[in-house]
Image 1: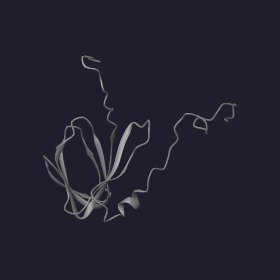
Image 2: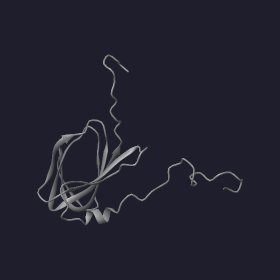
Image 3: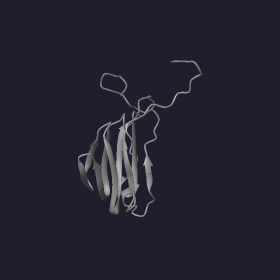
Image 4: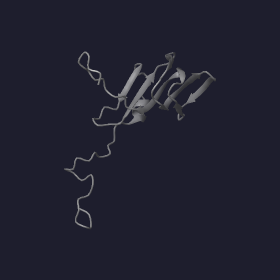
Length: 136
């Protein structure tokens, strides 16, 4: 309760979402022999964001691609690698925060110790199945 007798927003029993600890990224990054791919994904219902912790073992890469709709933030958690873009190759040491604007072309390559990184972007809307001939 507040001083005026009202309810405190976010109090237990309310339908207001509460902040939550999701994972220990240092522990995930310490998994040096983890397989390639997502080690963790944001999966909470009602979210407006998507996020992933991804591991690229040494010698692995994400080939050149373009994300047409979403800006992406990429934070290197462990290891190192390179970002290749139309303006050249950029080093990605641990701790580097990179903005990948929508419509940009990029590729990632893991360094000799591999590359573990966090990506965050706006959540894609889910697919909607429609009846044939329904234009809405």
